Length: 119
Image (cartoon, rainbow, N blue to C red; front, side, top):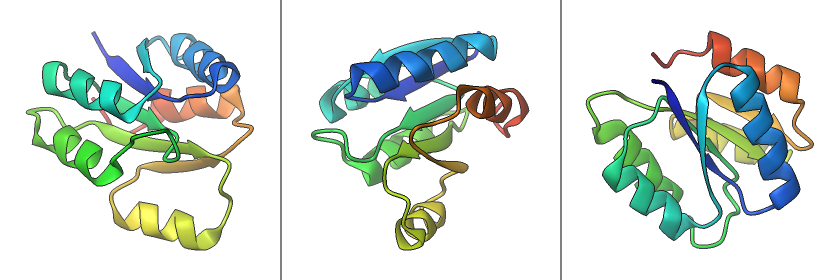
C-alpha cells in the first residue's frame, strides 16, 4: 500500500491535496503541524511527503532526514505559496523531487504522484 504524508495547515489546501492523492490511487495521511509530521514519520513509512514548508513547527531538514533513513526513501514534493526561484533552488538542493506553487493544480499533482520516482 503506497501511503502519502500530507503536511498542510490550511484546510482548503489540505482538501485539494488529499483529493489529488486519492485520484492518483494512493492513500493520504494528513497532518497540520511539524510535530504531527515528525510523530508520523517516526512510526510509519510512506512513498511521498507532500509538504508546505511554512507549516507551524516544521523542521524540514529533520523531515528530510527521517524520510531518507527508512528502508524505502520517500519522495518529497513541496506545495507552497513562495514562488521565488531562490527558495525553489534551495529546496531542490535539499532533495525535493518536485516544487509546486499554490494554488496547486490537482491534476498536475496527480500526474506527479502517478509518474514520480517513489516506489
